[in-house]
Image (cartoon, rainbow, N blue to C red; front, side, top):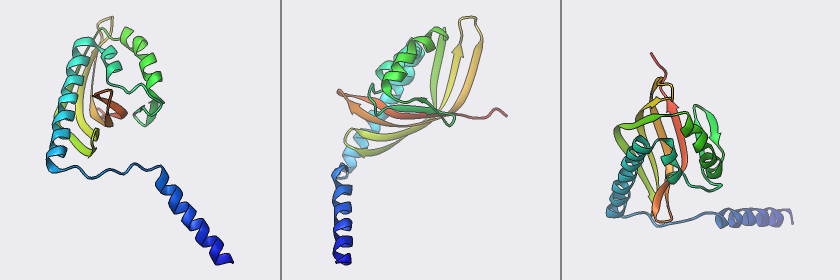
Length: 164
């Protein structure tokens, strides 16, 4: 009897584990290359728009969902997309001018149709309303996903390199 109970528990565990997973077929080489090109173009759009429009431009690039989160320097900055987008007006008011550049190649890991990991070094220059200039360099990594027909960040993590 004890063995039958253990077998039932194991079978239920295996069945339950498979219920929440999303299985997709691996991408073909041309599909993977298309994802890489598309995510790199997305990254260029992000840098251009943030440089031209300031931090408010991030609103179109963050998923406004409970799944979104952003961390920086080992700290959760935004627990979801709604919190991130709600904070952008206050962040924008403290920045008169901003420049965001990707330094080096944008690495892309195609995970499936419309889903990819991305990472790249960055350099950012911010000027506050009083004219104080702050520069930072570091690395951004994140998960990007196609939502509503366009790439958006689902997760993002920024780390700033220590100054020497």
